[in-house]
Length: 338
Ligand code: AHM
Ligand code: MG
Image (cartoon, rainbow, N blue to C red; front, side, top):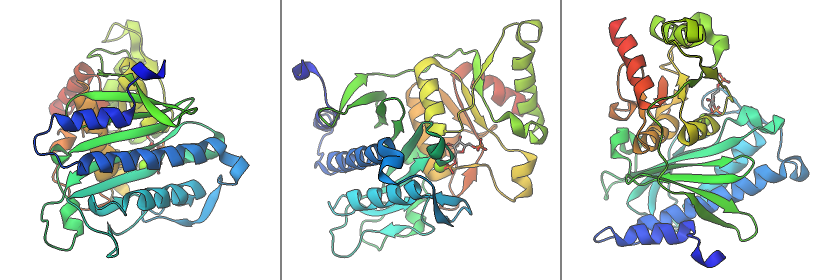
């Protein structure tokens, strides 16, 4: 039975065969990322049994209290990806500065950004969390890697993906040629291709937003949500359903599976803090936008396409509105009109 199943390793190598001049570097890098996610999955699964829940007693660069698992997952990503010679540097939500590959290892032509454990407020309550990553090409092969090297628009991404640690562990991946989903078979320790060619339906009747921020929203977001809530009797003439998991990976995965809209928009509370949004551009918004667009959906800040933004800082935050294409176009229209 296992013989006619495609493992992620097989998938990556077969993809490589279609790329003229491929050296295997990129495939090797993806494999190391996959290994890191398997290790994190194992830690998340064992939770309290192995003493990994709770706070690490320190804050990250974003001023958020780090969970033990945030710190452990970050270490796993660094250790899995630093040695093989594919990367020049890494950057993570959990580290203020970039992480140039240590001098004892060879340096390669790629850059890796990641959020090792997104939605970590969910860990202690045993709700789904995930890892998000993005791969960029290093702009200048010769020089010492710098933060500037990472400031590339999302359109430059070579690959992006996420691992979802839910009822089953999944890996969803794009290399710019559609989106494929893999499920971890715990018995053999391999991800198996279970969701080939994932697509987001253009139409949806489901949205996700943290409604506790409603009083801070801008008029176009308020208008959209008001119309959804008005249901059959309102402007839209249809009832809408609402979900909020507070775990972007789980949210995006639901949208890839059955459609929907996810919003963490700009609001007055965020603006008062002097921030550009809640979610981070380089390791949350861009990789998720790449996946969503590759699945036929759309991802905007409100007015602009997220992947066209020129990043200005490593930990830059942006508003995120993504999902089913027709709804995103409608929301963009509301922003244009206001
Ligand atoms: P994190 O990177 O600190 O985990 O924060 C990102 C998460 C997203 O996964 C999720 O969409 C959002 O924060 C939830 O925010 P809130 O707690 O305001 O609902
Ligand atoms: Mg995050």
